Length: 169
Image: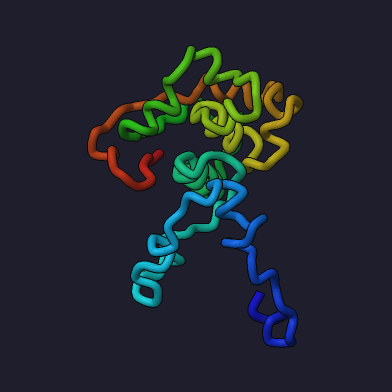
């Protein structure tokens, strides 16, 4: 947005507070601009933003990274994997165990699959990546992935419970 502005392109001046602006449309005018401008120029939230390389819950990314890194670094092929153990704290346990084991290992919807640690780890190992296709009807019924989800187990470790992203493989 800075480059067009430098060339004289202007944007909507009422984007936030105008009659049809964000605050009036979504918050019905009930907002406090002081919350937005408090510590402006002193606190830079950009450092708290991260790139999301996979289209699943951010909390699953440590496990995806671990699986893919180990497979790539050691030349592991999916057919040579007997078991994958995921170590994690409270949140990882929730996305591994909430619901029935069958629902976690064979999720029926895209959103359920994106929050299923057994499915995501199994997909990463079986396919060598996690992409949007992983969560389509066809991706969720990929027999290689479904077989691999059966080899994923979880070990709770309270040391991994944190307010940030947790989990290790």
